[in-house]
Image (cartoon, rainbow, N blue to C red; front, side):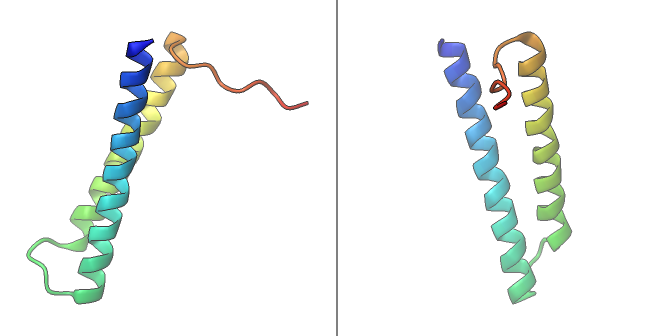
Length: 72
């Protein structure tokens, strides 16, 4: 049970980090004067999105999480 809670916490933190990077890219886009290019933040967002998907697939494959049953 604690392993599942830890796994879900990591997923939530990754999703928050993805949203943070998207917001940073928006700030760079609007202001335009940043030391780091906008693609840096967007690239991080894509990288962590792929990581979240891989972690979800791994959890489904190991049986740590189960998908919802079909609604029909």
